[in-house]
Image 1 (cartoon, rainbow, N blue to C red):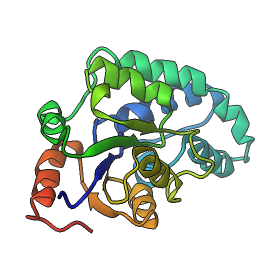
Image 2: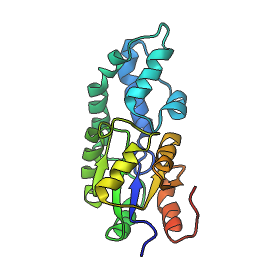
Image 3: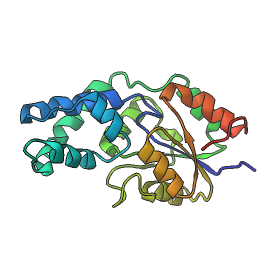
Amino acid sequence: MPEFEAILFDFDGVIIDSEPVHCACWAEVLAPLGVTLDWEFYRDRCIGIDDREMLRMMAARSDPPRDWEGLWAQYPVKRDLFRDRMIGAPPFLPGLVELLEGLDGRYKMAIVSSSARSEISPLLEAGGLLRYFGTLVCAGDTHRHKPAPDPYLLAAQRLQARTALVVEDSEAGIASGRAAGFEVLAVPRPADVPDLLLRRLSRGLPAS
């Protein structure tokens, strides 16, 4: 019997190398409003959290502080810009299809992300990957977001899985998986996912 019933994957930074594109799209739509978003701030403070929380932080640190909802109003523009830039050639990690094919049927699988479903589903469909995942838990599916445990708990509930391995790259995501009571495999970048995950599943590498 497998050690885990399910494998729960974060999306951005785990399944796909999309964080720099998210940052660039937000920076482009916020610049006309006089708001600057640089990669260092995004990388250190924003990866793994809900976009609305990111914009609350940015609104509070603006000089003078501003209403975050005015920034959030730009989300549809950012969403469409992101989709247009990614849909032609989604930067999925090398070996992802082979990895998922090997796991399919042995484990239940889900995507658990702080990004919107409208940003995730089209990319999975374009890459022919949507069929591998029993459910997607995205922004808006839970009242509390990462680092709260709610997204991972909901994914496990939907999959009817009691034991799960969470695959994450961000501090907020790692905290969320642990708070849900699951083992977490922390990965530094998408390219490392196949090797680290297969080693963990074969008991070659303990997770955090």
